[in-house]
Each structure stands twice: as structure tokens, then as C-alpha cells.
Image (cartoon, rainbow, N blue to C red; front, side, top):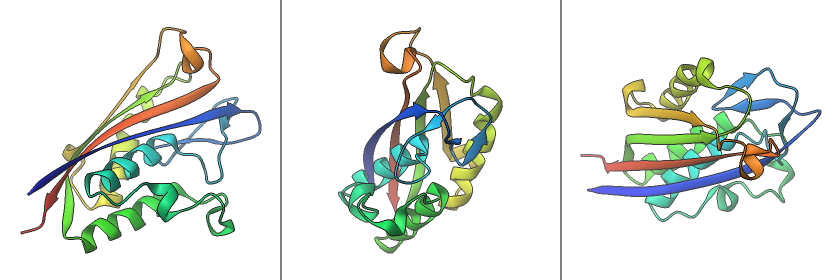
Length: 159
């Protein structure tokens, strides 16, 4: 049995925060604002996995009202999501994600992001696609006010 889920996340860019995307600390003048490390890519990925199995979203599992998740490492949260979906009898078939950011250029970091997600999910890197695009200076991402990400996950029932 196959299940498909979509995830979306957005975070505001601010000074004084690290820019962590896909578990990679990217040198930049601004970082993403959030209760956790605000890893926009991993948040979208987790929501797509949870959505595929109708398990809600990361806010349900990791509420931003809880001090337990203040400045949380989203790679650890992804590992927990992978554990939850495994308990439900599913594994990742593939994930296809897109990060929307005017800056910085993310191409040098894409393979590390893919490897991080694959490792957390216990799958081969060939099952993880991460892309990056700009919005040609349009909208909040184009104006460098924030970064967003979309993800689609195909979840497969374990045999």
C-alpha cells in the first residue's frame, strides 16, 4: 500500500540566528526564526511524511508551546517522525522537496541535505530529492524576508 503526503513550511529570516536547512549549518548573514532551529526543509519533509499517514503535523507531535522543543535540533525531530511512521508499519518510498530562497545559493549544500534526510529515514540517498529555487525577487522569499519549502513523500507499507 502506498500513501502520499504534502508538507509546507515557512520561516522568517532574521539577524542573530543560524541558517540551518536540511540539517546543514549554512554561513549567511541571517537565519530562520522559530521555536526550534527553524529548519524549514526538514519541517516540510516531516509534515509530508506525517500527512501521508494522516498523523497530523509536526505541531501536533512537537508543539511550539512546549519548552521541551525550544531550540530543538530538527534532525532529532525527523528521527522521531521516522520512528513513529515505522511503528505504523511504513517506510519512505521517496521524498521530493523544494526550498524556495532568494539567497543564499543552496546548490553547494544539496547533497549534504539529501544525505542527512536519507540517514535519518534509514533509506538510500537515491530516494531523497532536494531542489532549490528562487522566486525571481517576487514575494516574501524573493524580497529575502523568509524562506519556504514544499515536500512530497511517498510512504510504503512494510511487507
